[in-house]
Amino acid sequence: MIRPSNSADFWPFALLAAACSASAPRGPTFATLTELPQEPRRPDGVVVDPSPELPVATEAADKGNGIVALKPPLPDRAARAMVAAFMRAIVTENVEALAELAASDATVAARGRTGAPSLVDHWRARMRHFRYRTLVSDVLYRDADIELYRYEDLETPLPGRPLRPPEMTSADVLLRVPMLVVRAGSERVFGDDILFHLRRDKSKYVIRQLVEDFQLP
Image 1 (cartoon, helix red, strand yellow):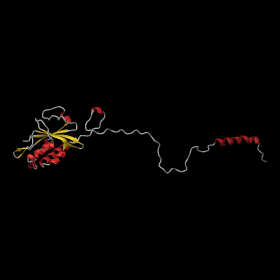
Image 2 (cartoon, rainbow, N blue to C red; image 1 turned 90 degrees about the horizontal axis):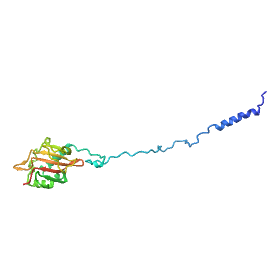
Image 3 (cartoon, rainbow, N blue to C red; image 1 turned 90 degrees about the vertical axis):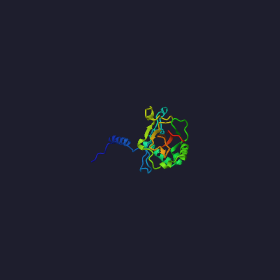
Image 4 (cartoon, rainbow, N blue to C red; image 1 turned 180 degrees about the vertical axis):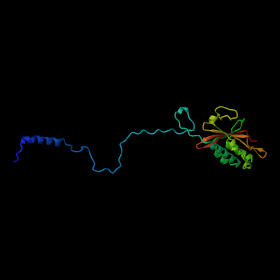
């Protein structure tokens, strides 16, 4: 025979069960999703410092400007190409081509003489007076004989070197071209050498000034 349980013995178990059920976890209290969203996930925003920007590149440094970005110098072949283009314009008597090689304020100076006329006007007059076309097949100079000087090369005057022109800037170059041909027939048409003061114009050089020991009759 089974003895009925005493009600006094049941209550401790009932209280324990109620306490366990009250303390059992009931699931997360934060919002949840049953499906992943379709739009792309956007990460949390972060602070990004802007990348430093270099100043606009210039041809020469100014001590008062602090940090500067300098343009790389043009190669020597750019200056030599200008000399070759100038000689072609002369022997073909092409004033328009010559004007494209010259700066807007380009001049011609004669050693030991005052005054510096416009380069284009000066050579236009020479082409009218002399027959440069007769020299079109002649070798007027040798590229190997060209002396090229940059601004810093002429900082200190040295024997055998030309003086630095007052208008020369650090991006300019100066070339001395000894001439192999100075006459057309019996007439003298070139000086013994020509100094080319070339000024940088973006990715090329233009003629700023020519210095030559020559004078029109």
